[in-house]
Image (cartoon, rainbow, N blue to C red):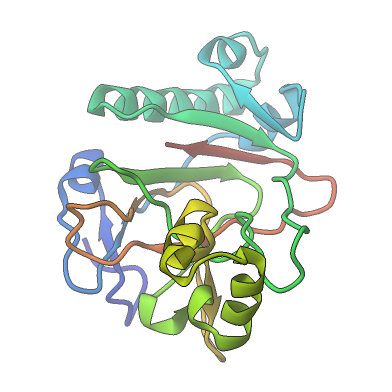
Length: 232
């Protein structure tokens, strides 16, 4: 399928779920997008779900219990099909109704929450799948447009003060507290927004991965608007 993101070697674009899970990451490409124009009223689903916490996991039973209009039915069918496809593939999808994620405000010189550009890490071969059905979507950046925060001299010095231990254990400290997963955008970078309705597969940092992990961040939510996100 034609790349809908011109001049972007980071993203592969496909038109089926089978292509999404079977396309090999290679070179600079560490994100694959099943590009879709979904039908249905996803906002109706959001308004009828109950937010119990800032992040509320929505079960299949919760979805099926909703009394929906015809457009709401179409939206629900899309979500249920996506959950089934991912489950059959061997993934463990989670549908989340989101008000906001927890903010990391403990340190003023580095942020390690999901609003900061970061990569995902796993000890086993896996990928991150996500689809935003309603609300703002995540951003990604090419790896050559970011700098690892732990390599920025002033941040590194502050982290060394925080560590206050032997130099030989400093790198392990950075990994243990996930500081090494976070990145700072370089000046004049242009993030790619993942948009609504598309199902994405992002490369994760694991021992057998052949490409660099995909750098991404969660969006800042709009006031009074919940996000509906499928992720695994």
